[in-house]
Length: 114
Length: 116
Image (cartoon, rainbow over all chains, first blue to last red; front, top):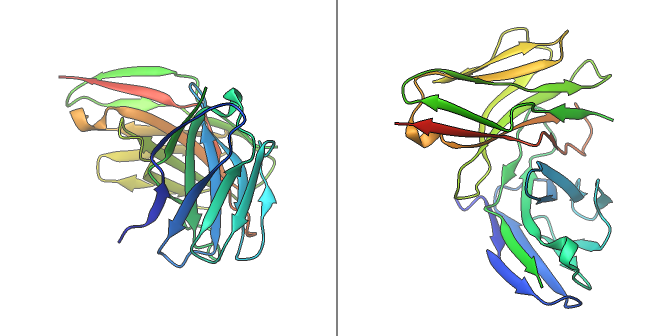
């Protein structure tokens, strides 16, 4: 099983450029999440989608938008990239109906904004 | 709001020995879930072990075990018979019960080195 797949794995952007990070899961999970990880920090929640058709802000949503395209896919968009958005981005999913189920993570996208 | 604190930025252990990583958390909830994730240099986030707060028994997964002290809001991870492959960042994480949000609140991590 592929689990949670993120594309691309690496990306370099110039300030002001836009880009969309893609995430897809094949586990039929209801809930999906986007986190960012900065040096010396744990992961922080950007946005989440509890179920298909719903999205909500997390701890650090400014500068980002998301789309839950269908049950499998949850994309994260940077409309006008800023150097402060240089980070490693993780997508995760969870079944969502059973509280003790853990989140499953993708391998991350390393994004650098010059 | 809940917070998770890992007070040891770095730890080191000799191969085959035992090491304990500390984690404390702050919450007003009585029911919740706690997790330890491992992040090796490959950057993957790998679930190591999880604990439901309503369970008094400490969780164990092979060489990994936890010491869950609910009253003290402490959730430490013990790694026995340490192996070179255990070298990684370890993150403690908290999750509220129920609902459909289910996001994790992470500590800042502990970098574990294993000496041969």
